[in-house]
Length: 375
Image (cartoon, rainbow, N blue to C red; front, top):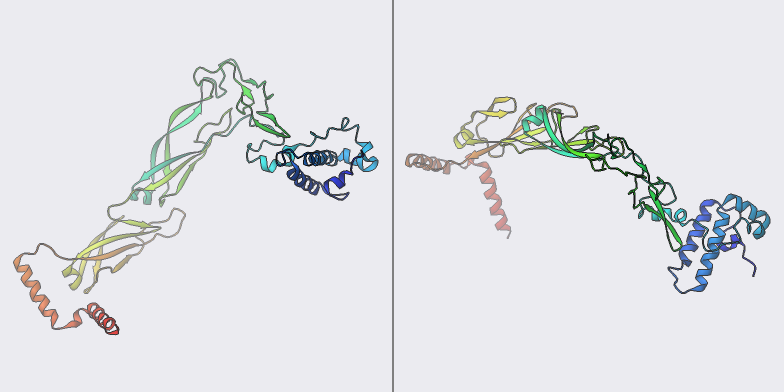
């Protein structure tokens, strides 16, 4: 029985590009794969036929011979024809399998050799004053460092790691699963490509030991919660002599008893007496630079916001300092004695005869009357 034309098998024209050829083959292979068509002899034959056609046409030399001489030009190069095995599935479906097998498909080798150490994170708690003004702190960080005995090799002093005999130093082994050929991490060397026959007694072959490092961290003025300070090379030591990772110091500013921060501005609540709010006066209010005088005009209401310019925070990334916002809270007197109550009663009676002293209350009550009147 004569073979069909390979271009016809794949449903493409002569001169087709490599990308279109692969696309056509992949479509047929997925459609007729035996795993998707169990006990279907016709689909299996079409799958083998497409596989054979793609093996020839995807090879530049074989394709040139086929274009010139037809099947006669490639029978010998195919070793008598082997319809079931030729095409490399890890190349065709590499974009799919790379997600499941760590990108190992396609025979690119394993993970052997030096590897960069992991980055570390350290949360640094600061008082508001420290964050605003900047400071230098000392921290103690647990990390992995190169073993001094074996200098990070993991092998006993005087010896060295040897090439893995299972993977030949690649770090990956090829596994055949039916029609598919995929690569997996070498189970013997765990992807390193090297084996340690005589482990170091200090690190037990790991090449790294856990230690605590004491570091000095300079915190710039103006940092806020969430800001990160990067200390290059202060993370975990790399495996097999690889470079160390970085240490990221993440700032967390503690709550303050007086101030709340919002970006470069500070807010605080200033309680004032009923008399000061009505008559006006002068108060001392705190700032991060000391006390300042705040003038309270007569008739000040609760919630009034006073701005002290330049008394906030200078941002770490530059720019002018923010402001301090002082929000007034009129405090109602409590635990009154008899004389104080008498005075307030007299004061209340005096206000009752002239509603102009309470413009906000009058406006509110008028609004209530209109509301119920509309109902």
